[in-house]
Amino acid sequence: MSIRRKRSNSRGPAALLARLVPALLFAVAGAPGVQPATAAHLALSSAGGAPKAYVALHDEGALAVLDTGANVVLGYIPVPLGAHGVAMTPDGSKVYVGSDQFSTVSVIDTATDAIVARIEVGTSPRGLSVSRDGRQLVVSVRGEDTVVIIDTATDRITGRVSVAGPDRSAISPDGRIAYIGSTSPGESALAIVDLTRPAQVGRIALSGAPRALAFSPDGKRLYFTLDGSDTLQVLDTGRNKLVTSIPAGAAPYGLVSAGAAYGELVLSRPRNELEILDPIRNTVSGTVAVGRSPHGIATSADERTAYVTNEESGDVSVVDLADRKVTATISIDTLGGAPGEIVVQPPLIP
Image: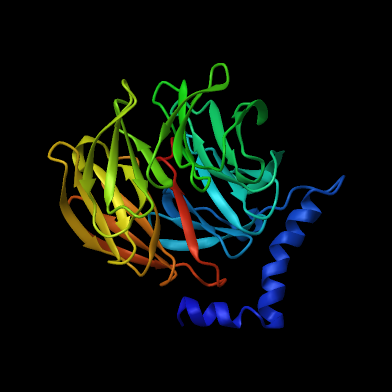
């Protein structure tokens, strides 16, 4: 059954109930004296302690939890409807997820897959990113034209910075600077936020709305995609100047840095491809056919495996980057929600 068929059926009473249950569970979890909603009862533990992956189902109030060892869906965690924006701490202990339709960021303990906290940030939080040291979470609060900075040790807000139309973000390797995609009509830009002050300290005007952002491993370059451009833009972060653009297939979408071994990875939605870019030669060095309408991408800790979510085919393509081929396809769309952003745990330490 295709995504289109599932969405057309979403008007039925059974589907409507399925859509409401996660939100109701979430609401009950917030009631005084009631424990947070948890998926622990679903036994969301991977065989052999393999890392888990978490996938936002944007059209539903849920995160899908995957076992990356067996490449299967373990179960679902109820979250607010319109899951948008997912980030994980580097140690894999916490997952943060925003929502288009609520004003909170949910905090999930990956040991139990329970929602353990909700952080009130403002309307429509999205574009979540975590610093490499795991100490800070940056949240683009779209409905408030604000970027919120959160201390991950306490899950409390430590700062707010005004940014017009904030969307995706990326934090420098040293954790001091965040680049925020500012997507207000006619005012597209990269907003530069000093997280130590905190304050906006610069703005780089762009010809189109910036979408996915990712730093190179050394932090000297920022890669990002633009609406209406078939290229990956490259910013010199020392001078805050655009230095080049890399042809990246049709309508590049999604972005992740896979380090020196495999370069930058982007998705081509029209071509249903993963594009592997060579950051030295500034060319596409290879492509891999994935599912229909690829959306989100993440890599394993060793950066050899890429996980690509596919909205229209309702699955996840598991890609071996060395061999440049899909080694498994995980069917994920059992709830009718289109799989979007994805994060993957590092290997678990006994």
